[in-house]
Amino acid sequence: MRKWLEKPYHSLDYMLQKRFGEKVYKITLNGGMSCPNRDGTLGSRGCIFCSAGGSGDFAADPSQSVSAQIESQMALIQKKRPVQKFIAYFQAYTNTYAPISYLRPLFLEAIRHPGVVALSIGTRPDCLGDDVLALLSELNTIKPVWVELGLQTIHADTAAYIRRGYPLSTFETAVQKLHARHLEIIVHTILGLPGESPERMLATIDYLNHQPVQGIKLQLLHVLKGTDLADDYLAGKFQTLSREEYLDLLISCLEHLSPDLVIHRVTGDGPKDLLIAPLWSSAKRSVLNDLHHLMKVRNTWQGRLYKEDPYD
Image 1 (tube, helix red, strand yellow):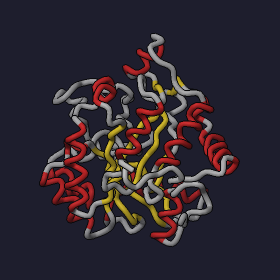
Image 2 (image 1 turned 90 degrees about the vertical axis):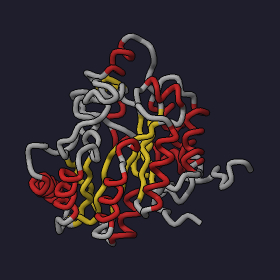
Image 3 (image 1 turned 180 degrees about the horizontal axis):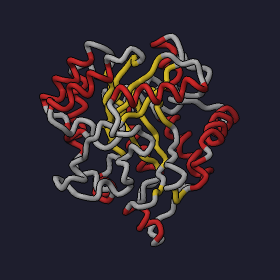
């Protein structure tokens, strides 16, 4: 039975209000870390879609302390909304790619802030050594810890094209280790990657239905200035999805997703000064309104086509 009836899918907002009893906002932080896809370990140019901000284009100023980043963003949000509870989200680059001596004080400063109710850490599955896992387990005894993993796709050819830098088996191992430590897992996927048909994208969705993860981000592929993806796009090697194509695909993904999975994101919008395509993605509120309207008109919802056993 669907419990999240205010929307046709199990939204992050619904989950947060149920868990914390009120509205909760995410604060994006920059821990000043790098990435093995940028420092020469695996590569130097990052993933093909990654801008200079390392997926943290909306994150705070890394020259500030963690507390200063939190306070400044809290103040901006509270000017508009009476919010008292926040999630500290380390977003930019790979946020477990540093020694424990660097990570521990950084994460403790964030999780101990009185306004923070949970800690979310964006990272790669190949950057979760046993020492990092032990630290995350320790932090999870203070407040809830979420680990956000950038899978994007299950298909090896697409993963090679986007320069993800690790095989699917590495993701599976990381998920099992995080799950064994009772850490919540959120998986990032990208819809509209070059060469991926709707059937291939749904295969990624079906795969995640049967992994022990708690949340998913359904991200629209968008092209940003200064990326290698932009070079391919401007050379005419692929096209981005139209608004109508994306909404149809997104609804199909939601229909196939387990109703228990929390939907953390259903679109994507890069900074307007960097965005090349699709330009319609910058109208985020309008896209969300269209999604909710279409799902209502079609009388559909998250999990309508979900099969608990993939072999049924």
